[in-house]
Image (tube, rainbow, N blue to C red):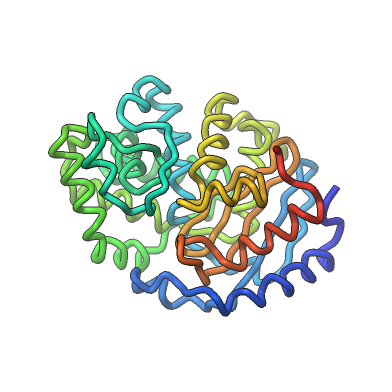
Length: 309
């Protein structure tokens, strides 16, 4: 079993931290641009409740695209597979996560998968509720259940920063609205989506969410089935095929676990049947993934043969 001590993890973090110098924080979202590019932390949560960690694990990070997996799980539970996948596809894409290109060349013009921005916006559009506040409360409660932390909330500053600079996401929304995939007011949807992306937690919470996916939807600490087995399975499959943006294929070969990244530098990993991983390293590579976080996972995967393939 990997990582029997915090000291072991600390050594790996120190080794991976050398790569932060080659990355860059996501300064196109002004609030995320304030992050310290040298930060790197990790938590590994086991089914028996043990948790090993290293780095500044209490530092809070916004979920950003990690939230796409959670919103997908919620709408699959709300609406069912048939409804969801009539409106968003299941195929990986080699294009950047914020690209509009495939929408223009695909008929019908539905997004290729739920992990790119266009697909995630359609998924968020499907969250049930009377208004933005009610829909957001439902998503936040689901995330609190997954993380086992009722104090998880969202950063108003990050949400505002994203909302004010969401020009490309607005373009995606209007394109999807033109084709009848999105039917609500675009500003209302973006209000919900930017709050979703701004939900923040620390590495320990991230690892705790990861283990629920790893254990097929069961929280091993409470024994509660938080999501159905098939929902957890679908989400893990998307994490493998699309979870690391257009670097997902390389990630599957080098590391080989279900994982989802966000441009805040967070990574949530789920090693099936074994443990959950939470990582924070805000210096990003050119694909938008944590550069030192991926290096850290490479070290772990190589040392402990984590790959599921």
